[in-house]
Length: 263
Image (tube, rainbow, N blue to C red; front, side):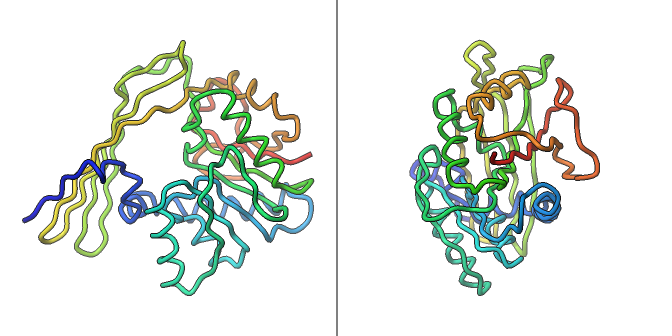
């Protein structure tokens, strides 16, 4: 068995095929939620949508298969290349753009956008977070929606946290371990260490990645959103993606999904 170890491939986002495998089971519930939220909250029909930070494009692909005019935005070239090939294999169309999602400049306006998997927390300062929200709002038509998902840090959160995921497809198995290595409430940053191991006959790929995520309490998120009056919360939910079970915006809301509407 050969083993690939390379610093050039140290970013787990450079392995979109494995990232796709690990989180694909979330896709159907998210898409069903989007469709229901569009119907309930958007003013008028939703046809043109975009995803900032689309990564491997599991949601872009799913929404394209539902007949939406989809645009995916990401900075990671391997992810965009993987998504481009996946769309081609499936006979689907989407517009893919390499861009910084704090300063979007997409042609035309959109009916909705979505960013549900903590990508927002990669923006580690207030200026970037507000810039992103304002940029998304500028791309939306009046009455359009932005569905934003992020992990809210509870007031009694443990400083140490470990999450693990497993996935398999054909002869390939993938294991991911995510560990919080530093947690600083004052600086509002937690450091994340991810180990991804993918095994298939004749090859093992191990990838270790470190990156910061911004911390938000409910109060802190609401303060950030208050700086973007173009967007208002019209629904709050959790990662169960059940439109019939809205959640109160309080300190018990942890895995949060906010439906934001362009005024």
